[in-house]
Image 1 (tube, rainbow over the protein chains, first blue to last red):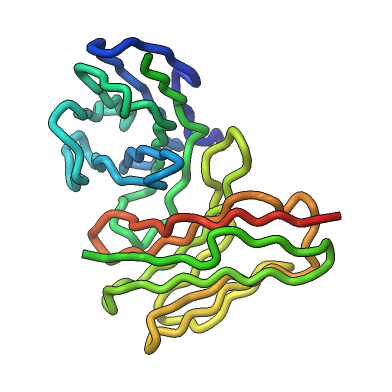
Image 2: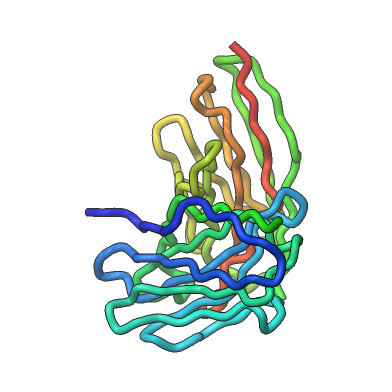
Length: 114
Length: 111
């Protein structure tokens, strides 16, 4: 069974630009969660999608948004990029995301904002 | 909301020795506690998990113990090997809520 895939793996942008990251969950998984990982803040929860609906949201500004498609694939978008947005963005999938099922992570997208 | 603390932040052990990482959580209603291993350049990988109705779980050289009264759980790695060197994260999950991760422990296994 294929794991969670994320594209692109690396991205370099400049301040003020916007970026879209993509995540394909494990087949059959309907929940996709997004995290930001930085050396100083660790793994910070961004949001979770289930059946095309955002079900949980972390404490990030509105510049961070996401969506989920009918095939459970998900995208996240960051608008008006800031230097502090440089991080590893991870997505994770689970069967239903209700906390009782294992969550599996993709390899991440390394975003660098110059 | 849930808050997870993790200690130590760094741990160095000699190959063959045991390593123990401890996490404490704040919400007594949390009921699922996974551990992840993250190697350089990779996403976190689930290595073992435990649910609140179980006190201990073992998988070869890895074990996790849970003390619900004290609200802490620990990862035990025996007979450590160089390939165990990585960053380990614990998490605590309340049903219906998002995962809350500890800050991580960098484990170095010295040959």
